Structure formats: C-alpha cells, structure tokens
Image (spheres, rainbow, N blue to C red):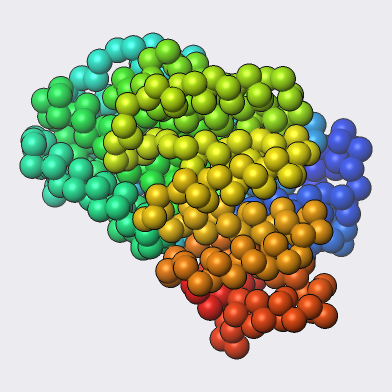
Length: 469
C-alpha cells in the first residue's frame, strides 16, 4: 500500500455508511474479490482505516473496492466515487466493447500485467441497445471509423492469404485445446490478436474477407478467453469473451455472438454469480431461432443451468428437455467452438442437478458423460472425473471417489490446467481427513509427489502438482 496523500476520504466513509459496512467487512470483501484473479490480499480493518485517512492502495485494489461496494449497494460505483483513484496515474484499460482492434491491443496487457483487468459485474450490459441492429446488418469492407490508425507495418489491404493464416492458427489452437490444455496456445494467440489481427482489422478489405476475418478473430478471442478462464485469470477471461461478442456483433454473426455470451454465463456461474449467469444465458438465447440445432442446444443447456442456479426447477427441466430434443435431430458435429454432443449435454445436466440438490442424479449424469466423451477430449474428461470425485466425497462415498480418481490417473495423459489443479487440490484436502484408509493413502501418494509446482503468477499460492500433470 502506498500513501500518496493524507487528506481524509469522506467519499469512502459515506459509501461504507450507505452500505452499512464496517471497515473489517470491506477488507474481507476485497480479499475475496482479489482471489478471483489470483491475488491473495490480507487486508484488515487497519488497512481500511488508512484508506479513510487518505492512503490510496495500488491498483487493482481501488477497482476491487468499487466492485464490492457496487454489489453491496446494488448500483454502479465508479472508482472515482470511492476517493481511491490515483491522480496522474495512467488511465485504466478501456472496456473491450468497442471496435475489435483497440480491444485486442488493450487486452494484450493481461499477459504481462495480471492486474490489467479484474473480473467485475459492474460493466454495462453485455448486449447494449445498438448491438441487435448490428447483428442484423452485414459487415462493411472498411475499418471502424473510430479505430486507431493503421500502423506502418500493417498491409494496405487484406486478402485471402491473411484470412487463411488466421484460420490456420484457429484450427491449430482448437486441435490442441482438449488434448494438451489451453495454456500452450494462450500467449501465441493473444500475441497474434494484438499484433497481426489488430492491424488487419484496421486495414481495408473486401466485405466478404472482412466479415470472415471478424468471425475468425471472434473465435480466437473466445479461445483465449477460455485459456485465461482455465488459468484462473478471470478478469482477462471476461475481457476476451466480451471482445469475442463485440467482434461477432461487428460481423453480423448471431451464432458466435450467442456463444460468447454463453461463455460469459458459464464463467459467472463458476464464480458463484448465479443471477448474473442466468441473465447472460438468457441474453445468449435471444437469437436462438437463428442458430443451428446443435448450437441452440448448446445455449439452451447453459440456460437450464442458469435457471437451476437460481433454484427454478421447472424452468431448468423444461430447458434441458428442449436441448435434448434439438440434439436428437442435430446434424453431425463440426470441428470448432460449439461442437456440442451428448457428453457435453450430460455434463450440463449433471451441473444443473447438482445446483438443484440432486447429488445422486448428478453423479449418474457425470458417469454418462464420461462414457460418451470422445477419446481425444482429455481435458474435459479430467474435469468431469474430478467433479465426480468431488460429488462422491460430498455424499460420503469415499471408496467411489478413490476409484474414479484412480482410473483417471491410470488413463489420463498430461494436461495442464490451473482450474483442474485447483479442484483437485480441494479434493485432496477432503481426502486428507480420511488417511486411515489404505486406499486414500495410496491415492494421495500418487496425487502429491514430492516436487511441487511454482506459483502460476505472483500472488497465487502454489498448488501441488499431480503426478499425472
């Protein structure tokens, strides 16, 4: 924490009084919010007292303070209203809602600066009033009027060769995601988006090429968002997902726009923001009648999970039924984002049942998902298996939990995933309460080798590296 002034901060004091919060409660809320992006803060009421006296914490803490107070008060609270803004500091990264090129350049900071974006619910609506009109209009052959000027290295005009290069990278990232994990392509794709792709989107191109380039950029942004989500960098993940939605809107592509909103819903549900997750899933379903059956089922399944997260049992089952019927009549899946199949449906059904309190039903659905999962989807298989072990332990099925994890360790090739490692660490912590069991001790010996992985990035506690990772 750095002190830049000692003028009392009446703005923060007034916000705390309005929320009915003590300094200790604000400190705890900031600590929890920081964990979402991998920051382990240990603030207490003394730190908040210093803020009230005029100290200003370093970014991204002011943004986190604004975020938690926004949630407490039920209205947006800009950083400036907290009195914690830093005079003369560089402006915060722009929200990735505008023209694609500027957003992609801004988001590239997330790789070198983990504090560049923090996950927040206070952004303006993900489907602004002007986007539905944009979805129904064809793309133009000219760059956006307010896009930054073309760099000296940017080609004067974009053609088929540029599009093919971007599509080749997309195919490569898609092919490796499930087999090796998303970490291997994150830096490569993020760098490509911020340099070559940003320049190409600023340059002029034939209308058809420009639209396809926007679609490809949207899918690459989606994949990069997933890579950050899997790495537990939630602010960056949200930024890339939002960029994917914006690029799809520019391309007048309702399918990719819906899938990006669906991804944001998945993220919100994962982070426990159930009402927000449902709102996003319903926004994704707004273009449902314009989607192919398989992608429509993909969106409906998440909409069902959003309803289940809000304890709306009737809506959840009705939506799952609709998704099931669409999937029954869908054409064969094509490679790419939204390649929904029965294993994915069963996993969504399991999560919906778990949210509704039906643990046994969720376990049956997870078992079906594991049986139906294509052999090459190693990451999804591992996530499903560890989730099943987690539910078995929650229901006191110690031997079953050990059995499913043992099968995973016997069969699973190497997959790098911070999200998976975090869930596995939670399972290990639960297993350590049962070290009287020979099976548990044997399993822990395989899950906890002597060597441990280093921190994923500064501020994050190291997670024991599983032997299979």
